Image 1 (tube, protein in one colour):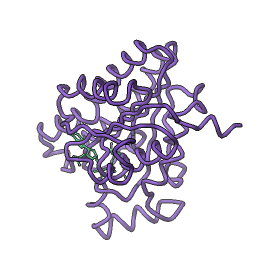
Image 2 (tube, rainbow, N blue to C red):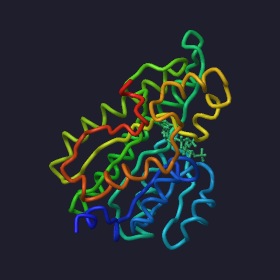
Image 3 (cartoon, helix red, strand yellow):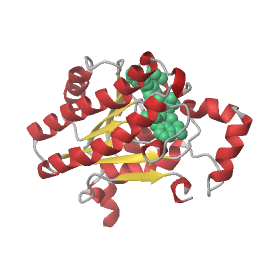
Image 4 (cartoon, helix red, strand yellow):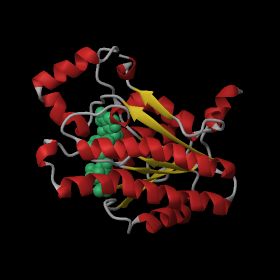
Length: 251
Ligand code: NAP
């Protein structure tokens, strides 16, 4: 049955940024498709764990602005659930400030979480996939600002453009190991990340008017793309950033 290609039974995933928003939605999708999930966030992922059950979802509390937690995250997946098959690099932050005044601190904070740690966590996951044999799946969360410039978010745009580039370069090197590296570029989704935009009446209506689907996206809107890129159904999809944006990029 073709739908069996989307089944994640027996698979183990690490999902960063699992306590809220898009990471919580992706964790839910994976568990519903049969996978076990190790979540990672700075805060406790208790809400996600209550939603999905302790047998299906465990979490590590870690600050991904440094590389220090990486080895422990991979080790936890292997110790708790026996292996690692899927990594979702979802944790991310945004800092808004005019570029003319933009601080080194806001540059480093965003680049460290969204780009530096994303690369080295992907490297650690790929090493585990190679050690196990049988390949694996890496999905990074990109952005509309992997394609566009944005306003007052220079480090975010730089980091998300890097995510799209890294997705291509890593897939070039790791496809030979059976590792699929892809990304999802969400449009404007109703989460904490966009709270400031949604609370600004002018920005909010300007954004809504430009979305052909006529609404903000929700974490549920990413579930299909995440399952596809985590499953056998995408075994011949490499290095691609898939927009889930209600038509934003087509405008
Ligand atoms: P969110 O609700 O703000 O969630 C961000 C997640 O990242 C939280 O789980 C947060 O955990 C985690 N995180 C941030 N800094 C961290 C750190 N230093 N260490 C560990 N975890 C950290 O935003 P979201 O919208 O779900 O965003 C998820 C991803 O989608 C991000 O990469 C974002 O850039 C991307 N994205 C979002 C949109 C959108 O419209 N919402 C659009 C395009 C792309 P804590 O709460 O514990 O800090």
